[in-house]
Length: 496
Image (cartoon, rainbow, N blue to C red; front, side, top):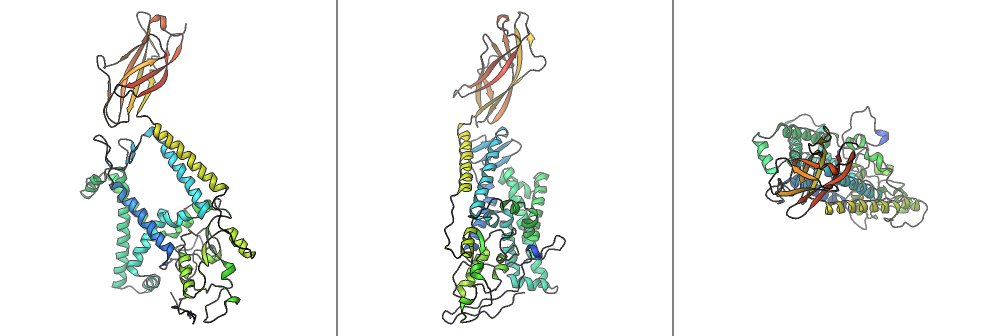
């Protein structure tokens, strides 16, 4: 429980007292056992710059997640109008004006590469800020803690409630909290399924019990995992399940900004006394406020730990205390290992070097991959063809001495309108091209945003039949805009 200690303010600048909190860093390595039941952490409410930043990031990320499926984007009469849609039945991924087909999965690969490199870059610059601000586990845990604090009160009140005997008030508060957690979990799963179907239609289907079983099962699974991870496991997900804390150690260097305690300034720590001489002691008054606000249950004064997610709430808590006792701020701050070493050697600190070898390499790789993807996107064709040569028979001798080959041609129309095409060959002299079932038509019609398949015969007269095989190209041309696609294949004949 929280216990206030004798921490008063200097006579020259009156301040309210600073409470000393009786709290242990239960999740630090020395206190943690793989075979020990989880010790519940009661994070205290923090106020300050970084807490405000976390609120803004949480609000923005949750708003994007929950609202993005409801954004509309007009693609024409033959296409869905949902801005972001993963359409499995049609095998499409829509993202505003971009439409990705299954054979264009390399775009998604490029996005994943850019995301990974961006994560490496951010980590090399400022440590685990991804974990502290934008990781889904952090965002939803923050939301769950906010609900918990709203229903049960801040740290001291929650501890008292858990230790109190069973009562109507305790049951009511616990039931309300868990009901709200489950509601958030259901909303999280519900928002996820809206990315895979038209959101307004699926929303009505879900509540009228007309949605497919996979929709309900997905909501149930995600509701359960959100409830468990955000409400029950919390810091254990980051400590035991996530591999990133182990990986990020290889991505930071001595110039990376990390949340650090300035032990050269804070030690030796001691309780605050009125009118004391600061020259004989450190600025840390051992109030444990930094430990109380930590959602990971560690003490930043113990040095760098893989459990630390760099949320910087300890900075806000410590700065609040320093302001109350009229001491300089940033006893805990984002700082580099280089500056830590320079202070230990009584040398002046230096500004962090943001431009260095690894950050330049990461930035260059991001730019290169991004430009490659942009170039591919700007030059991508709205027409694609695939040619399959008959396997049996490879060729058919004709009565006049000529030879005929059979092909299956698949034409992919990536536009949202019906198109008509003609088929021709290049590199094969005197070839006669016949499309089965299309004799006398003005062109091969392919529906909007669809794949059409045609049976094609190519015949050569006796004097033009190759010895064994000959390479040539099929050319499919749009009759309206002249857009063409070329695909090479072979013509088979008897070996002479």
